[in-house]
Length: 80
Length: 412
Image (cartoon, rainbow over all chains, first blue to last red; front, side, top):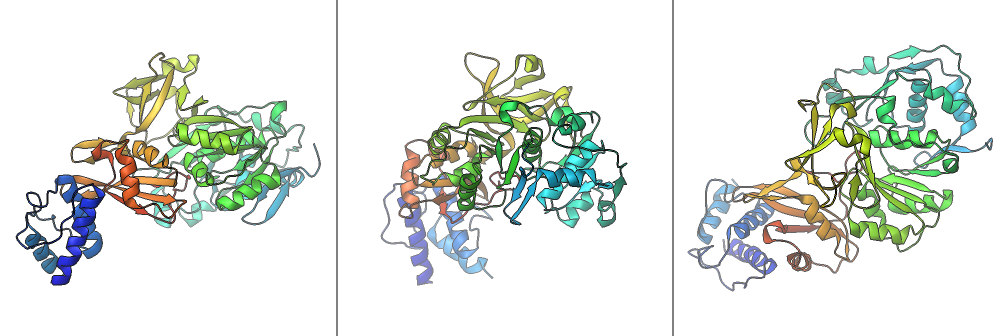
């Protein structure tokens, strides 16, 4: 689990950096993707593609995901 | 004509065929297959010419069509073997060849479009529509053609007819690597090449100059001023011509830059409705799969007239290639054009990947000359020229980009 958080933080930072936004240093389950990290819908779309490229899971497939914890849940359930 | 004049050199088989041999084969043909289904370019050219000479209809098939695709056309192994006998009454040589083939006025050739969408469509052309742009003149008799199209597609067929009607030498470049192509241009003093912009972009990294080339023709995809500039540097003596052609209609319009001229006599057969180019059915081949709107065929090509003229237009993109990104329409050609203008980029391909958040996410595959360029560098570059929704969210630096059977960028 901690490893996944770390990978997810790297992916989020890649999205932020590519789009000239400020990177984040820590990530909590409760962190809100839009309000706290500042991702817009295009950033979220990019994030889903990058997560899917890494984990093979489309985390937005069954509806909007709001927090880091919700992504991690999907990753834990999605693969199996 | 020099007895040993080369008709065709095929580097894939390392074989050279003289005109003497070509005429000899034509004069000794006893039967002609009804379908051309081979990857041997000499046999393809020979059979097309024989069908024209003996006025027998012919069907051209891609050699990489799968059995299932052939099945969709109603063909099987047995039907492909069908041959028609011909009377051995023709004696052609370099003096009567052109006159002899031109007598076949009701000859028809059928081909299948590569189909950017869905399954290939069957199109039949007569001599007139297929040879609309063919020009015969004494000035052209020493032309040496770099043959860069698939020989079973309409563009290849047109280049072949242009070459054979002037008894030119043809050097097959289709299927060779850029390095091999550049050596062949030198070795055979190639004077003319007709190809897609993608083909030329693959050649562009070259810093060399090729002085023998006097004519470069580009067609099938959007051509842009940056490529035009690079091509003029590599081929300093070449006139660069851009052709608008389609499998449905053959070659229609030509231009010296990125806009096309409509001939005065064709003005009534061409119109633009809602930004899309419509062509009157008079200009088309014959096909069951044309969907006409009244008497008009919609090319689905997005074009616009130049401000000062209704006889000149610019190609903007293909309607069915537009990608919907979060409700915005993105023209992949436009984005590729900007990406390709980055000094390190050789070729790019922009496409949409289905996405549950915004419909499609824009992705670019890019080949670069200088591996120090990063995804972030390219994005910063694009931010100067494109609205945010047009910037690919993911840029993959790749070793190679696939092209279609026709030599165009492969659209996903």
